[in-house]
Length: 459
Image 1 (tube, rainbow, N blue to C red):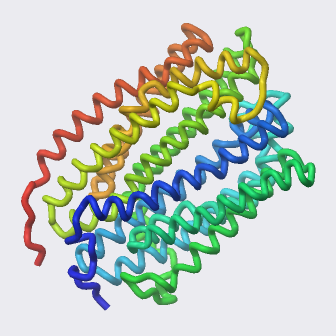
Image 2: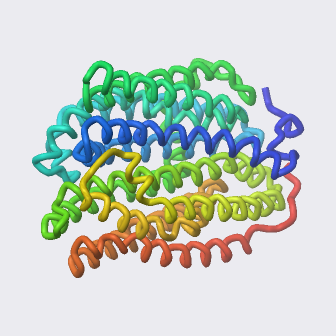
Image 3: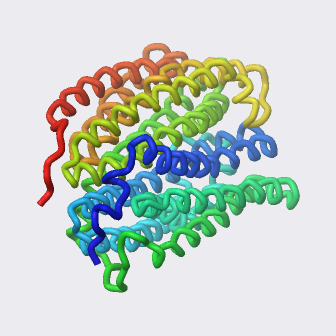
C-alpha cells in the first residue's frame, strides 16, 4: 500500500510539536545508550580504580568503530526511508530497511571475529601500557561477544524513529541501560567479578535491547515488510552508505583522534609529573563526560532528521527552514546549560568515576575545563554538519566531518603535543572547536540560501 501524505504528520503537523515529540525520546534514548559505557566506567572506577578507567578508555575505540558502522547504516537507511516515503516510494522504503537489518548483522559478526582474533595487537595499537593491558584485554575480550547485538541496537533504532515511533525506540534502549545499571554492581561487587562483571553486564544488556528492537519489525506503521525485503541489495547498500557517510566519518574520525590521543598521552605523559596512566585514565573519563553532550546533540538531530528528510523530499522547503531555525535555537540553549555544568563542577564529575591521588584530580580538572570549554558552540557545529545528509547532501556533510576531526583537530593535537608536551594536548580541543565552528557556520549560511523558502507542488 502507498501511505497518503495526509496520514503522515511529518508533512503537516506543527514543527515545534514534531521536534518535541520526535527529539525528546531520541535524546533520552541516546543519553541512556551513552550510559552503557559511562555506568561501566563509574562502577569500574569505584571497584577497580583509575587503571580500570584507563582500560575501558583503551578498549573504547572498538565501541566507536561499531557505532560508526551502526550509525552509518541506521542514519543512512532512515534518511533514505523518509526521503522515499516523502516521494511516495513505498517499496523502495521497505527494501532499504530490510537491507539495513541484514547489513547490521553481517557487519557485527565480522567485527566480533576480528576483535577476538587480534585483541592484544589492537589494544597495543590503541595506546595500552603494560599496567593497563591486562584489564583492557579482559574487558574487551568479553564485550566482543555483544558486538552484533550492539550494532542492531545502534543501527535499527533510527529506522524505528523514522517510522514515527520515537518512544518505542527510546524504551528499547532504556530497558537495556536499566538492566546494565542493575547488573553492573551485582556482578562487580556482589559476585566479585571485577572488570569482567562490567563486561558481561554490558553484553547481556545489549542482547536485550537488540531483541526488543527486532520485535518491532512486524509493527511498522508506514510500511508492511515482506520476507523478500530482507536481503543484501548492492544498490541499497550504496544509497545507505552515501547518506550515512557523514555519521560514519564523524565516528571513525573521532576513533582515529582518540587512538592518536591515547598514544600521545602515553608518550608525553611519561615525560611529565603525571606519568602515562593518569593522562590516559583522565582522557577516558572526560571523553565519557563529553559523550553525554554528544548524545544530547545527536538525539536532537536524529529526532529532527525524519522531519527534514520527509519535507525536503516532498519539496516543502518552508518547513525545512523552519525546522533548522528552531533546531539551532534549541541546541544553543541545551549546549549552554551543559557548558555551565561542565565548567562549574569538573572535580565533582571526575570524582564520580572513582578515586585517585592528588595528581589524578589536578590533571583531571585542568583537562576537563579545557577540553569542554567550547561546548556551547560545539552543538551548533554538529547540527550543521549532520543536517546535509538528512536532505541527501551526504558529500558536503562528510567533508565538514573530516574537516573537524582530521584536517584541524589531529594536526593541532600533534603540533601542540610535540611543542608543549602533555600541556599542549589539553588545549588542542578548544582551539580546533573554534576554528571548525567558523567554517561550518559559513558553509551552512551559503547552502541554506540555495534552498527555496517557498514550497513546490510534488506531482
